Image 1: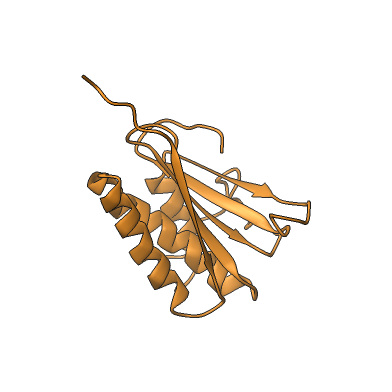
Image 2: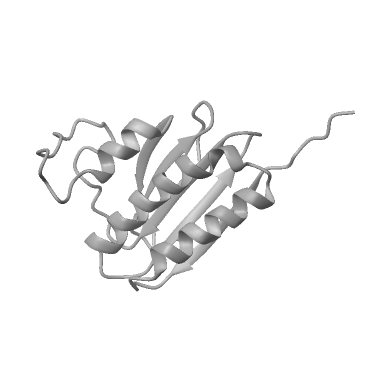
Length: 146
């Protein structure tokens, strides 16, 4: 008899600290191991690393990693931060590629190349979300709404 796996989600609140992205990636690996999704670890970790690095490098406040699965085999990785500005091209994927010798600017093209779907939400209401933005990327299957 097949069992139904309920949807789940986790949020890890992080301080603006250079160690935070590594701690978040470790937590993501543990979450995926606990939910028996090892096949998604390389892609999910890359997506999380790029989104976390974007928040750490381009904002001054705290940020959070959110991980969610609504269907078996599909995962959404999202990063919230306090800055409401969405990186150029993130929503539509039309940002120009960085020069080959560039030291920065490769993160979002990596997200576009590795994710099944991606997007951004600007959170204007204060309260539980504290405003800011949420950048997300999905892997392991088709797109779905957050």
